Image 1 (cartoon, one colour):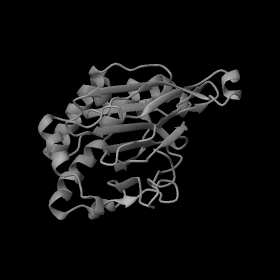
Image 2 (cartoon, rainbow, N blue to C red):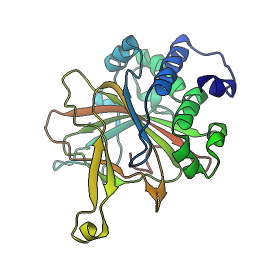
Image 3 (tube, rainbow, N blue to C red):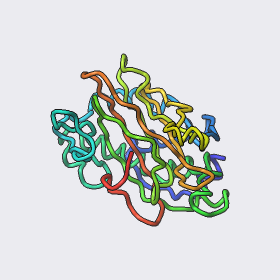
Image 4 (spheres, rainbow, N blue to C red):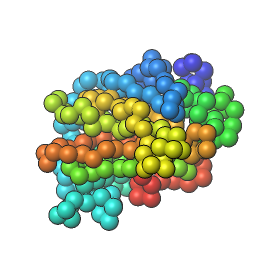
Length: 265
């Protein structure tokens, strides 16, 4: 599989860190199982080499470097943002401290690489082909727009079940947990209940939750079809000292580009 994909990818001059992260991440994708229900998704640990992950944790920007994602939607009782973001692929990398910009730039190059996108699309090609309206063996030929966000969530943040939507094709959430972080902070996957339950106000059943572990990733294919909806969300975050750091990578179709503000995460 990996050899078939790599043949489709043009080689380019890259920073050693960028190429090392690509090689490691792609190998982990190929070695990890994919679940088909309630929609195609994958979860695994060891996303980055251990020393690179330690550098990510060490170089996380201070809170003042981030911007509120949507203060009208996500704020606590005191009016403070409960979801902050820093878009690494749309010019906001200049908000990072100068001594850390090259590191984050090289990491972003890896996360937006064709090799990584092709490996993810290929691993979940059946659902990706539904989303893109093509044959499964054609998904790796589709060139995406890729958006990379550093995201920081705080107490009182909640995201109701939703399927994302166009132009999203795949959503990837890299968890940057610290040792000792609560492990139940990951994204939940849902299934709609039968009609009778929905009439009684019980619309969704949580069927899985990605563990919030250091150096781990949860990925799913976005679909909003009557027979295949990628319902996901986040239950209320409780605990005043809880911080949920993550990198969210959105692979978009040719229909548009997500600037980090218009869609849910």
